[in-house]
Image 1 (cartoon, rainbow, N blue to C red):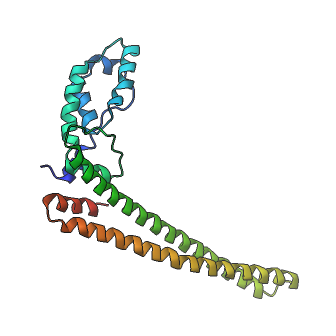
Image 2: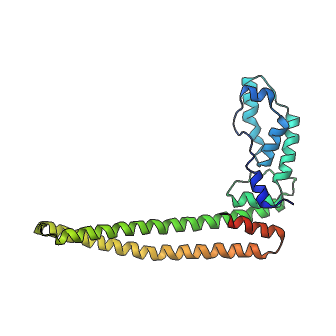
Image 3: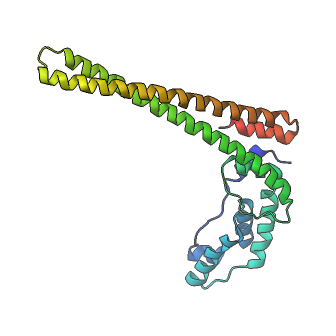
Length: 221
């Protein structure tokens, strides 16, 4: 069985999803077009735009038998359990095309991969939230330093000092709010990391060759 890493590379071969030019319609290898659609898990409706484009631009009726023959070969490649995991781990959508191709095994692996993708996304979002709070806190520190410097400047008037004191109070309150929020954000990030690492460890500990390939995919993030 091909490894999931090899399958990931093969997924880069995708057919045209939209309409086709007149020349493409006239000289298309419909078996290859069908294969590419099948290999990327495109729904059966993917052929409709091409059929319409070729009929209107070139008066060409596609060779449906050749297309379906190629699509069946492509689906046999797409609908493997290892590729199911790859599709899910990439956050891609499963279009329900594997009926008759051991769909149960494909979907089981797909949901494993999809869960890994979800956990990674949670970690990334939590990390982004922490970084955003850190930037906000850095900006507050700068504003506080600037306000404190203006407060003690000899040219600052009494009225301005009163206003600066009020602004400094507001900035200190905002700093406290951000620091309190960061505690929760950092804990959420740590929890998300632990959950992801625990799931990756479970995938690695399953012991099969497919499980080891799952781990290889997991670290390629």
